Length: 323
Image 1 (cartoon, one colour):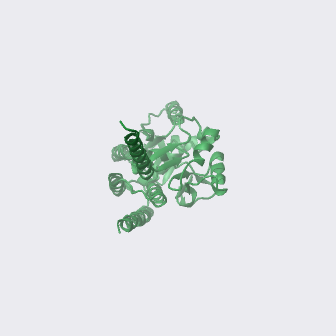
Image 2 (cartoon, rainbow, N blue to C red; image 1 turned 30 degrees about the vertical axis):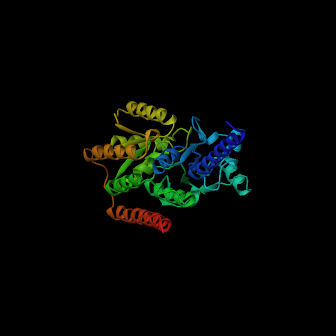
Image 3 (cartoon, rainbow, N blue to C red; image 1 turned 120 degrees about the vertical axis):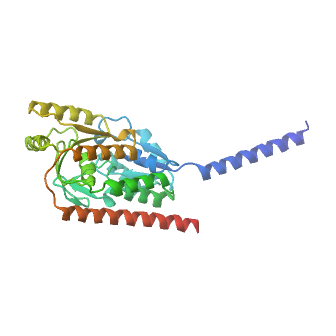
């Protein structure tokens, strides 16, 4: 083979390599970084085309997590099309927010405290502020719609249609359907029970690694004795210990409560479907305290309004891109 032919082949190979690199740059997946579980589970289902990274994967208590040198390098390598989702209630999240403010991180930062709704432990739905239950973990459907919309706007990604359809149908079926008393063994469980319609909720554990107060224990056992549904939401290992602790206390009080355990480490929509169906079966066979329909109807209108606004705004983004 002549030297001219070899040079031509090398030039052709170089051109192919360059084209491959360019195509790779245009087709590479958007990276979505989250600080706490189960935001990663929700966003993996909502945006299967993205690369979702949980910074605190495998960490027993994410609240105590400290950024490693590898984490810092990874965050600095993110592009403007990438997203970092922060709940803003752990020190390492505040450090990431400060890095973004100083221009060390090019990715878009979504501060959940500015877009989410929060519950207080006395059952009020409000914006972020002192005294709120900050352990929603991305499971409260009204907040999921808001988060998906925010990520879609920041990245230009279109949410998975099947995910949005199933969640919307699930919300229409179960949102505010039930009433009366319920027991949330973990803080995140309060959000699921509130979404289902319960407003008189005894929260057994309010903060990770902090035991229940005597008053919280007494209230939970009182509601259990009245047949109220009991829910534990699992996003990390601690919840299993909490369930065992409550069951032991209940048995000591002569009670045999049926605890519904929702393990959201295994998925979001499917697990939410299963827990809603299980609570529905339990509620139809157990009478709970009376409840004012006026409050439930008001919340239904609120949730419907939130979801309608998010769905319409997402649709507008999609239509705009198509044009």
